[in-house]
Length: 182
Image 1 (cartoon, rainbow, N blue to C red):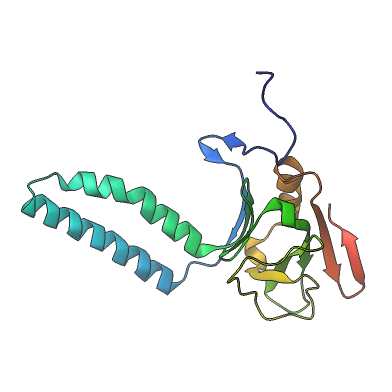
Image 2 (image 1 turned 30 degrees about the vertical axis):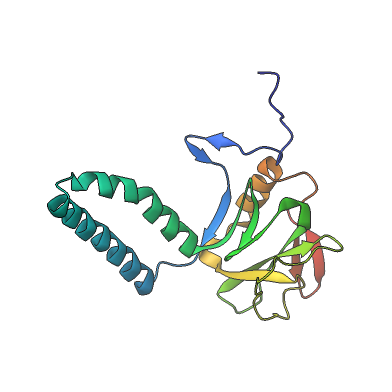
């Protein structure tokens, strides 16, 4: 297949039925669990109601709803992700053309790591995007806090080198300054 562009980050990469990405999720909370179970019970109730009222198979409703439930739940729990579309910080999606660097900071005595992005000159956050309050340990304009136990810098660097556009750099910011990751 000579027509495939092999430059990293120019095309989505599909491995084992899923688009390749790097993702860090928020911890599973009681609120997430309640939302998931509520949604599942709502879909089952809808399936039963439609099966009774319209004499249709309720399993069709359940099977049709499963991908939407999974997508909703993944988006709700995603703290940081990069994939073919760009970099997502919570609910804010930045296109690859706007991102120049990922900045990682691990404040001492904190259970969280901070992952942020520096934007190219002239780029702004998408309309309506609300960034988190500024943290003195994070020099980037947009960032998210992720549990240190869920964050793996080596994996992030490996995936970025393989799948992100070549202009993306990853730097580690600490009190003594910044250094390239990897």
